[in-house]
Image 1 (cartoon, rainbow, N blue to C red):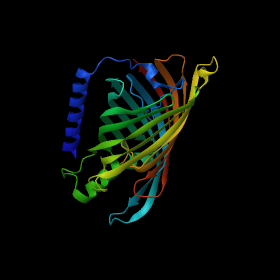
Image 2: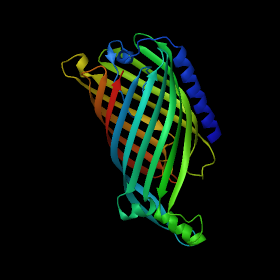
Image 3: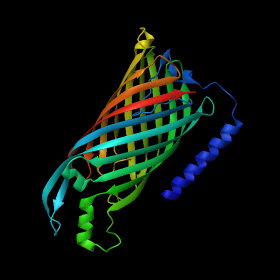
Image 4: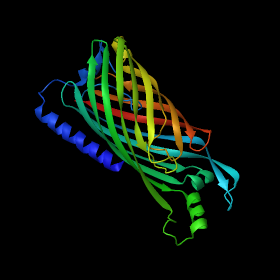
Length: 320
């Protein structure tokens, strides 16, 4: 799959360079996220459909509880279960360039780390660091006074580094300390190719709705689920801009996101259900700053147990 993703990345870059060289200059500034007089509020949890030029950055921190890991004896029999919690940090940067009124290209880089916050979690989760990068494109399909529809395609790859003392001890017991595979630090990569549709709708100048549906294939960090698996992602938001009807330049955004794969944490979880709420400043049409809070329930890999996670993020976005 790595050869496929490399070929797709080269194709997307070549297409972007060609279109940028031949496109005419058009206005694609902050007004490009306005429908029916409503300026849509951005979200780090659920990207929108608009073809415009922006750069954004976000930094967040949170924690997850209810992690469980089976404890096995030397014969491989489960004799106990360890419970624990982790803390994590996430960084995200993205730049999107509108080539013309119907096409935009984007690139992003991400980083994150998580750490067990108690003895049990340190033993079976240890320390994990993940870095990633991605390329994507948005193509406008339909635009009217109230409705905006776009098709999207994205390619992402992540590299993870894992320090898990419990796995290392098991490997030492099975293979010996001098074995080449008995390393305290393990690394793995995953990749995701996805595409789908995004929608924006505004029935009133103070209210806006967005939705997305995306599908693809992924090559997970872990090896026990096969080489590739399918990916599905759905979500929606509702935003209210108080600045559209009052002097208060504040916007509220709430939404949800469901996916059957966690690209930065598939070593511990599968399906994810996330709800989120954001508060942002709406006094300028070319700049947005806000605080985003999210709660997620993840299905722990290899069991029916759920992991509860909360995060707070500060997000900045500037439109050109």
